[in-house]
Image (cartoon, rainbow, N blue to C red; front, side, top):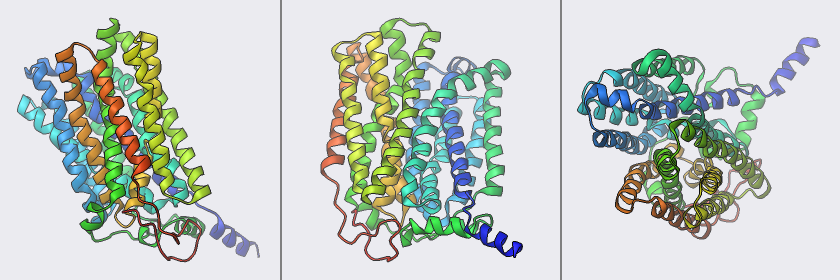
Length: 444
């Protein structure tokens, strides 16, 4: 009797392996962002050791986004065809090796090539993460999960990345810093090899109760481990193109501040490097708060309405408010105003941080990797455009104000697209918890 009760209890208890899987993905994104930004903290010794100029270093910075954009898009079909686990392990192996090779690449050409390959290795990260979440979590849990992946992990890594990397440089030198980060990637590879699986059905530790909980909140087409790629539904999805426009608009603000905020604070307000480091903490801390809030709001609204279109409303409102928050910076600038409203703008922007991925899954649920890669390519393209546009504006006008105006204008355009243009779901859409497979959302 006791044995029977124990077996019954084990079969009805949720094992929580889906949260372990999510933890692995969050850790991956944190390592990913620290790795990609580490070179910016070693600019001085690196340019001196390799004999490259500041302008050549600028090209090196763009090299990462070029590789990242191309392979984020190409990784989507590979993720959907071969599964997220295999592609993630290959990607992490590539970027860990390249990180280790970076400090001995020797020349401008070698460093440029290393950054392109690093971007290529990190490109599959978000498409594979999005597919993993779509296979491991029901719809009503994805807002929080992807807020952790696309928002908290990103903002959090930028928040801690500076102190971590600078302490490593102080302790083991700038070359040693790269080797330690490569070791972190190798450690993640070993752990993921043992624990990460493509779907709950592939993992022996998932209880029947947890497997049923996940399946109950998924569409039928989201339960397969591998699918054949069909490009027509992706390229003709109106909602996916709207997501790309909005994500580019938010990306322009994100990359613009990531690359130019330190220089803006130091040149505009004559702050020391130490003071700049302190003041740049605020926007990324606000980003963590915004990402958490966005995930909670998204899941609660979806639980009440069951409508994927609510994601677009939340993203549109957040992006509109994010752009509006920058207006005081170019109308009544001061150090207090700038730091306060940049933080508000970044925090509101990060409300959308994980929702892009949820909306991409909704747009093409049968091919989440391809959809995520498409959206991520739009975000990566803004990483190429924003730094150069901001640099052109600053060098030609001597001021950052026009750059902030561009950020606001793009935010308004992106918000308008998200609020007005999405296609509505058909009647009869199956909501989480409904048993009939029936019709699904027509989100093209």
